[in-house]
Length: 95
Image 1: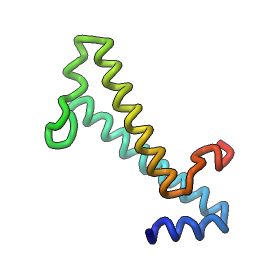
Image 2: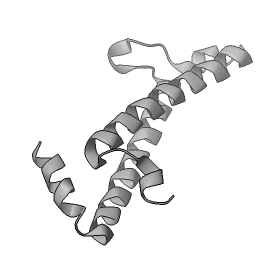
Image 3: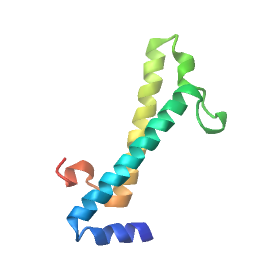
Image 4: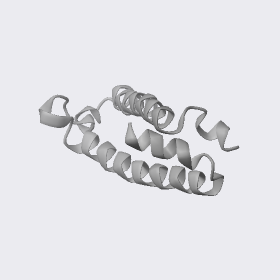
């Protein structure tokens, strides 16, 4: 709640708000690339999911599993971004 309140206050200073958004996006991008590599090579947390690379012998399944991971991640990231910055995503910043 404190983070959201601080971000709401930043809306009065658009340059700082945009810079904050850019920093969050850059950090999330780095984290998601790392998680994608882990999903490919080691699977999900606690061995909940098998590594995607195990399906490399079946191209349709392999690509489908990667796209499913990306789809789920994009949906989660959109929810996070909307919760932090109040919705609108890139459209709100003109991007």
